[in-house]
Image (cartoon, rainbow, N blue to C red; front, side, top):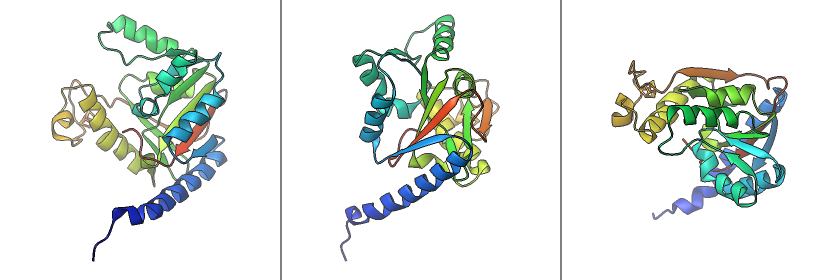
Length: 220
Ligand code: SF4
């Protein structure tokens, strides 16, 4: 019998939506604000309404934010956007830009994993992203596709290395085993990019954090 994958999309959508909505409820119990968008276009539209045109915006290292085209969209309408994924930056310039991102009015990033119980897990190499998420800009917006949702903290840490870490190592052309094999071996490489692990269990005081959950596969 011939079957078409299209026939099953509504079941996948339903499953992802249920998980995202359960995750949203758990995050709200941890003092995080949440919102839900059906797809990346709606998420971008929502964020362009939420962020004032006068606001400066720092961008964390995030494939998700770039997949939404937010840097181009915000810049085009006049926001001051600060981001460091630029080729040829000196170490000093790279550090200065990262520091400025943390002084913006808004900070946009994603998470490496979020549990169904509302824990937000991240692994950084430098630590600017996790530092700014916790204590930097007053307004932090974390955008996460359904692929970031996990059951447990352990699964979240594994995902952060095995999936996000491996792909990020490949993206930056790190000389780590995973960038060649696609598998995390919890390496001891001098170029290891997984150096700082954070688990946000409640929204930190003095930072307003909103998680925008999107029913689409986004980022690493
Ligand atoms: S192999 Fe090393 S750099 Fe790659 S994901 Fe694992 S710990 Fe991170």
